[in-house]
Image (cartoon, rainbow, N blue to C red; front, top):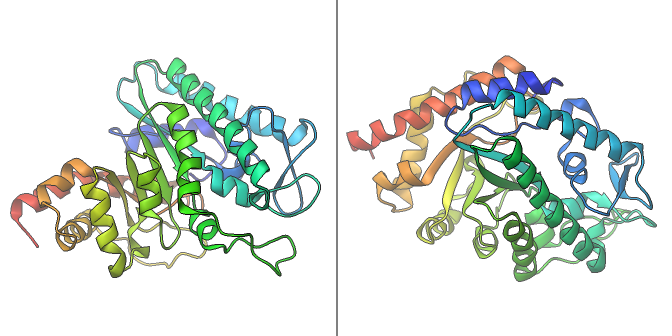
Length: 327
């Protein structure tokens, strides 16, 4: 979400997404508010620090990690205040192990931790412990909530394809095997012990790996789904996974300006996809959550709320379209 005030962001989320609110991330606060830094605050016994290029493993805890932990603690305090008497589903997010390993540098050299299998194993174990503790803390502060966990893995396709660059940029880190990637994800998901979602907003989202990891749902950007990948999505749905469908674009730098689609158009896009992959239309209302295509940090606060409202309204229109029997 945009901005730097967690209370405002949490209030916006509860107002616009009353059926499935979440704990927002605020990258605008700088290091520690970003996806990797925020999740680094969850790591157990594995300190990190900032560099000119991002984050790296550190010999001892320092100011950067302390700042990230402080921001997360404030967010939880604000959540506890805002979510009094909440008794529905509530989603928390964390960066997944493969994106963390691709983004965090090793202590003594600038290569990503992904280049060192031992570092990846340690990072995964540390993250699993930290994510489980985070889920438990949210459950404690909002005792009526049914907590859901989302792991964000934008770098997973690159890790699988051997496309993550070395420090020099002249080489690429050896590709991660699909079974290894699934096992790493499974370690985090199993440790959390709650319904889980894996989000990948990059092209070629690895649906089979996500399913093999034991996720309950996959979240992806529909605009990046090629026609030849739709059979894979159908198999994922038939395997029982839910779909968080990124069906409406986000606003901000690098995004195409223009009039946003109406909620009915967003719902129709999901309805048409369901028709193409050969799934019973009525199952869409039980299997699909309509979401923005990716994060909203680049939008204005007003635009972010409008996009969330559009997703909410599209979800309420979807059953209508299904009853009308539109193709």
